[in-house]
Length: 417
Image (cartoon, rainbow, N blue to C red; front, side, top):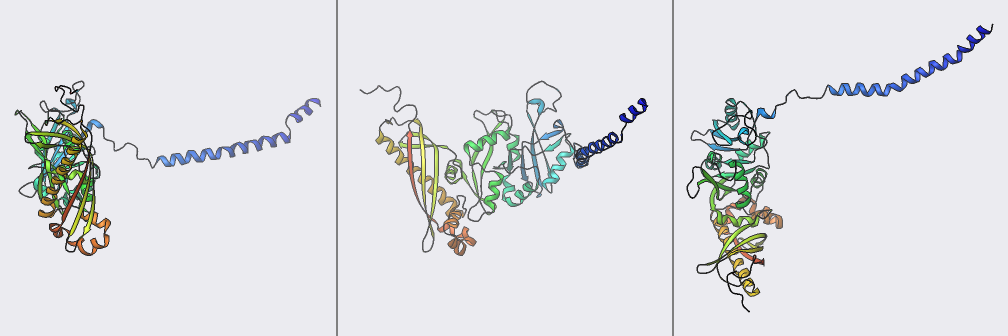
C-alpha cells in the first residue's frame, strides 16, 4: 500500500497538466524567431550577389579620351590608358608594356562614339572603364560641328562624369593624348593641372549649364601640343587661349593673356600674374590673388550700358623699376596704374568678343535677366546676340596691394640713414 501511494504522488494529474502547458508556452516563444529566419531567407533571394563582378586587373582604366571628326564625317575616339606594370613596384604580372611610356594610347573610328568604342574594345584584352577619366578633349573640327550633340553623347554614357574637365584642342584632340610631358606620367594629369593654374577651368556640368542658359555663351580653354625649349624628344602641353562660342559653335579664339580677363566673371576667381610697365624697360610683375566683378546693367534709349566694378588684391613678385615700395605714395601710384591696366584689358576683351563677335561669355545678358527680368523678356532675350554689337561699358577698378613681397628695396642697395 505504501508503495502504490508513493507512485500516485509522484505521477499526479496536476503535474502532467503543468508539463503540457509549459511546452506550449515554449513553442509559442519560438514563433517570432522562426518568422525572422524565414524573412531573412526570403530576402536573400532578392540579393544580386557577385555574379557579374569584374576584377580590377581585368579593367583598362581610361584617364582621358579625345573626340575628333574625320573628313568622311566619322567620329574618331582616342583613349589614354595607364600601363600598371610601368607605374613602379615589382615587375611582372601587371599588364602589357609600351616601350618606356607609362600609358597606352589607341584610337578607332565609327559612325557614332559608341561604335568607335566597340572597335577599340574588340582589340583589347581588358574591359574599358571610363568612370575614372579626368579630362575630355574636343578636337577643333568636332567643336565646329556643334557641342550640343557631343554633350548629349557624353551625358548618355553611363560611366561619364559631369565633374570631368573639358577642353578644346588646337587641331586634333588625339595629339594632346599622345604628348608626353616630362613632369607628369600622363598627359591627362598635365592637362588637369594646367587648366587649374593657367586657364579658366570648365567642367562638363559647367559647359552644359552655359549652353542651356539664355544670356550667356560658352567658352572653353584651348590647349596645344608644343615643342619644348630647347627642343626635346617629346612634346609638352600648353594653354594657348580660350575659344568663345555663339550658341554651340566657336566663333573666335582669344590669346592666353587676353583670356585672363575672363577670370573676373567666373563663380570662383582663379589667381594669375600680370606684368605692368612703369617706365621704358622698367617693369613690375604682380600676382593677382583675389578678384571679383560686379555687373550692373543700365538701360539706355537705344542700347544697353554696363557698369562693371572690379575689386582686386595683388602682391609684388618681381621688380625691375628700382622704386622704393616701402613708400605708401608709391604703392598708391602702383594701385592706380594696375587698376587702369586691368580696366583696359577687360575693355579690349569685351570689345573684341562682345561687340565684334557677338558672343557673351561673361554673362551680360544673364545679369540683365536677373536685375531687369521684364525688360530682358520683352526686348532682348530672343535677339540678344544681335544687340551685343551696340552694348557699351564703363569699367571701374579698385585695387589694393597690401604686400610688396619680402623686401621693400633691392637688397644690394645701401640702406639710407
